[in-house]
Image (cartoon, rainbow, N blue to C red; front, side, top):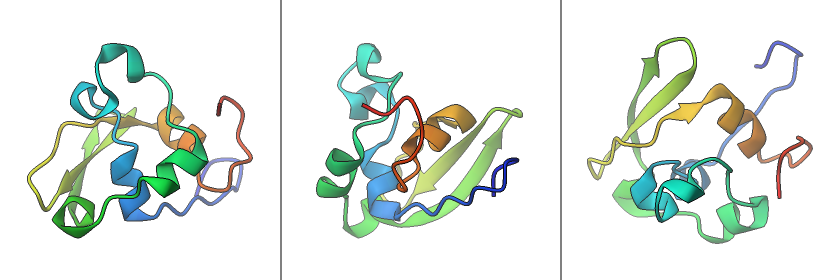
Length: 94
């Protein structure tokens, strides 16, 4: 739950498809913005790539999911996660 009371629930396959790492976003230029909601859901990942093993806290600004396929490179900042919220109501989405 966010400080303003909003609650976000992320489907794991969609969360993985929106991984912000340079490898998943196609280079550094794609890392700043989350993908559009429709794209995130249409490209939802399945199988071990969508199975969450653990989540590590990165400082006080982000989370680092560790996926069952070994991927652990996408650092999801709080701002990125908020803009990624599947409800689609948040500013900054394209």
